[in-house]
Length: 548
Ligand code: G6Q
Image (cartoon, rainbow, N blue to C red; front, top):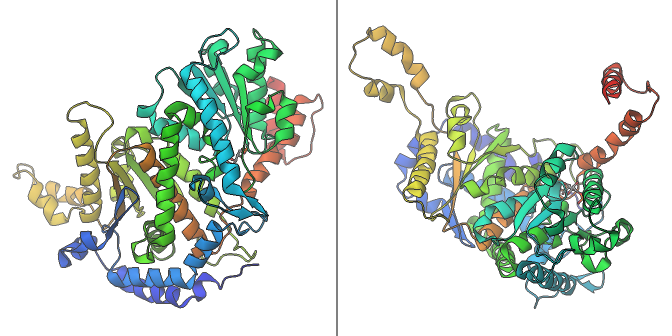
């Protein structure tokens, strides 16, 4: 078993505890005015992404201590263990090889005597053939018509990735194909969709690693019943395909094994967009673009593997995150993509980081002595500015923000993109600088009202500033830059997991959810009124039974 010293026992951690006493007194305004090189010193580039981390409450010493901490936690060795296929997911005894999914065909990676790269590329070839047939119209539905609508039925990791990426890359989408994502067991989700699509021109992808997840199985059965209202069982193979690791369950469902796209237990759900779970994305943007998406992620992998920690973008993001979480008491991070097509990116990251590092014990089972993953939340700019940014500017909590923007838009509407970028940069500047009481007074109109009234407004109009942010820029949102962006956050999550000493690759809380509802579900459908729970749960069940 890999065992770490407790994080708080590391010499660099203790040095940071002493250092933060000074750091608490710093103001970002002063840090900028003291050092005209701050932007070039605290920015870095990799895989088509540019990271400006200068608007953070860090000095040269802070960064040096953080990099020392990373070395004390053996980040490089742990990273190499992941890439080489060591079974670092200890509680499930599994390797963690989402990085292999984007490795070139020419590489070799042996796992339990099997070259996984060859297996991966065999499935990629199958995806290529299939996507080309559907996109060209050669793959016809039961009436001979081409497919127009694609429905991905999956949840969690089998939904959030493809849904986010299809939206992000909609500028690259095939014009005939409309993508739909159904995840919720709430029938309103599937019902709303089925009313608007034609079963004869619809292709359903059932995406489930285990092929046992209640929500997905129920939605898949209902979609099958909807299709069979007009079509026959023998037509099913033209309209239903599956992505899973569970061949037996797929056969049982009635899906032709020819139409099954496999993946492997060493791909975590939230890391599975690079596998056949990305089938809906490959159908939408085409296989060449899907390959570019993989290549973008691979470029970030190479950077993560080879760059010195001091230039290593995922390591830098992770260390700065740890600085706020464990030394400056921030309990959440806001993600602000200034790109409408990235609107699902905050919820994608929410799963990636919170499911991976939302842990309270270390890999060896001992309780953590420091806080682990913060809450990840956010929405696209500029919308957030007209809502919760108020709290970010003037609330009592300091919430670091990751701004994400592209230099070029994927549309041709004049003026919009400059306005968007202006807002993005103005917000990070305002968070950093704030507005002092004197600046507020200087901005006040010539005093017509009583001077005391004007003065009473000063505290309300004053902004403390010193609110940190990162800004990630890319030239444009393309398959390659999106791939690199996702991989950046995957590796940030990995590094933080190593720093905190947790297993980032299990999710027992999610597994619990998968079984909890089963008992109550059978109680709701039975005739008896069971009395097995606390009075609240019994009372709620009784009210639901009376109404059902
Ligand atoms: C991801 C999680 C979880 C999972 C879903 C769907 O890392 O484990 O979100 O992806 O519960 O599971 P299936 O793909 O097995 O249906």
